[in-house]
Image 1 (cartoon, rainbow, N blue to C red):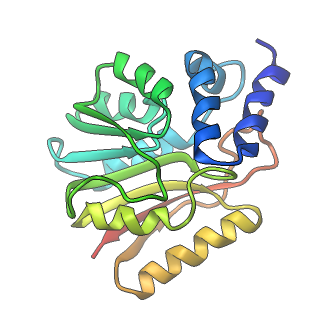
Image 2: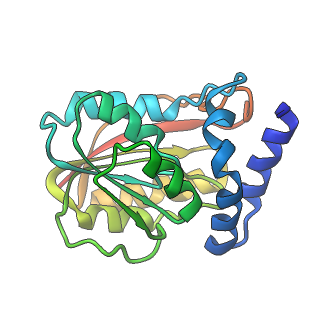
Length: 213
């Protein structure tokens, strides 16, 4: 598959009009997704950065960790290699979850939509991670409020956002409001970086670490 064909997939997901259309696109892309974003110069950086922060801040290896917007399970694979044993995958696309299931690193996989109510009890997870989902045409900023609900007090939410443009501004505003409301505290953040340097050289991403109150 050529680089132009792979860029076509990114254009399609960013142009999706609603979660249903987005799910359909990811279902069609699922079989080729891992190869597309990890080979041929794509060098998808965010999952590795997020996994590194999990290793830094989440000491217990047997606590439940939610991979929100798990896709095909790229972060789950990394966390499993690091010894984390109770990983839960959440994604809107059944096709992507089917690929993630084949990797045998998740104890549970759930089809849900970020931005809507998530069918987990309060204070379920020791940590929540999210990569590649807080970007154009994907999960909205209000998703973060629901993630604070299902993550335990003292637990960590570690996620990347595309921070260039209006979408990035909306996320930053939501993050600041959650901090003002006492729902979490900022622990660490990266400088802006190119998460997909060959596919999206114009896109800036940052990874944030928050501790839930």
